[in-house]
Length: 125
Image (cartoon, rainbow, N blue to C red):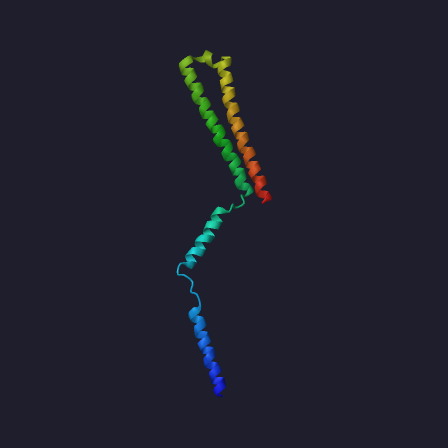
């Protein structure tokens, strides 16, 4: 019986020693874990829905060509006021208008190609 009691006290001492040696988690551990999760979710890309992509196409189109028409309107208005109607009908001015339209169209094409490449890259990963 004495031996059984002795084993019991030894077990208690071992438990106390193990509990005192156990490492305690820092107080801000929960905050650090949550911060890490938020950081990882912010850095990973979320898949873009098809509806949002279509919205981006329309947004790009309106933004680029809207700017083009604003530039052309300003150019044509100032040319009409400064040089007159005959200058607007000259071939040099028409080539300038065609060049501006071509540059904006090329820029829109580049944005579409870039969006397509990104879309394909996201599908691979």
